[in-house]
Image (tube, rainbow, N blue to C red):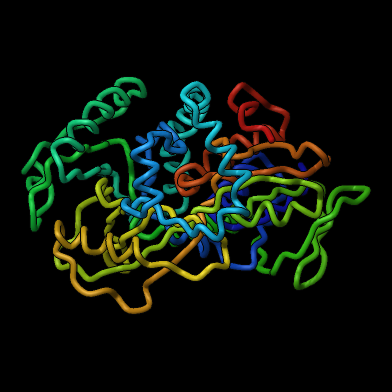
Length: 406
């Protein structure tokens, strides 16, 4: 039995802590906040079984021009912040070539295939089934051209990755949603995906499960870490922690925390926003509004609209353009009311140029382990990659774990 400290209590950190604990290790989970109060709180709440292909850097000239001119709601760019991101963006661009992206997708698809499977036993053990819907996820298209192209791609992915998929042309969506204001061109329905009506609450439920099984949750502000003769020492706002093994699962804060130890980890910081709205007849499941770059999902707090990517630094001022555009688009389809007071949020998705997380032993230090860089899929993948990390720390490796190794 090893003594292990996991830094970061988002879905990745909690998932790793539970997996290590299940293998008999003594685990302490440390964060300045309670579980699920940062990036894992603010996502769209979809456990995506269909997202088998990672988001690549676009290469089509017309798409790049739309992004550059701000004509797409998928992306907002703070150009004065780009110089600091040129290295990871350039690496991201190069790794998005057709050949590289195809190779990365083979790894990524294996991870996504484990997402729901890894969550299911934890949801049951944490008695959190009331937070989960198992009725799929939809993509709504407003133009025939967009729907036809998406349908062709969806048919390929459904066959390649053995996914449950249905095409709902035109007014078919009315059969599944009670009150729509308009009829879209079509909807791609993915039946294997699950959704959560309160992502932060699910992370907290997993944290409570970790404690109930004998784990230790500790809240403190983390400052630094350094190796010792017997392992690692963590400096925090409340003193020092000594441990044999240290797992860094700090999401977008991981590169800065590791930099003093000599690690230069390029990361594309994609900020996202959400807010909640009153709705008399909320949607039955989560929907991606493909023409408008937002996800609409029913949450405990109200109907949540979650945006795409804002390329900026972590401390930059907010830009709510995507959220306002998304609200207008969602209001044309669903019966949305006013914005719920004090329900806005922003957070950063930790996206690595290679599009898969770093999971495994740090290359320069014994007893230091990485578990971060899940990009848009930390909520989906945290428990699955946590299991991979736990196996690797016990000396059990395979091709998949090798592909994720730092």
